[in-house]
Amino acid sequence: MPPARSSTQPRAKREQCALVDALDAAELKRLLVALLDAHPELVAEAAVLADGQLGAVTVKGVAEEVAFALGLLEVESIWERSGSQPGGA
Image (tube, rainbow, N blue to C red; front, top):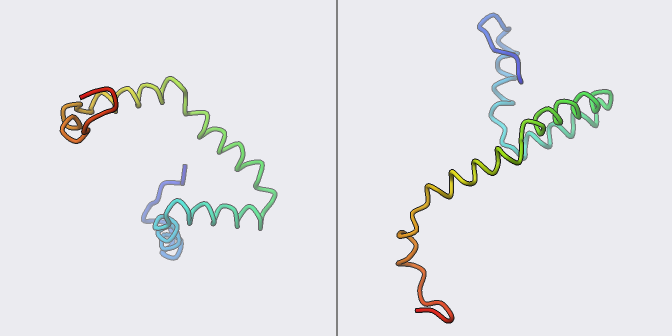
């Protein structure tokens, strides 16, 4: 988790954080790869952090999210667009 920003940080540092915050996922990935290439001593720490992030994802949690999303679907909304099916109407 990034450190909390405050108005006491130097302006240049806040502007650098804004630049990083503006990156999309692909750009952030390239930045991380470049940082780890330049600082291989950080690879182990990055692996621990990644494991912590991925460890927060559970099969049960994903199943609950999928079930919830499926529950929001209205079958009637696709009946009109489904067309005829082989062996059916």
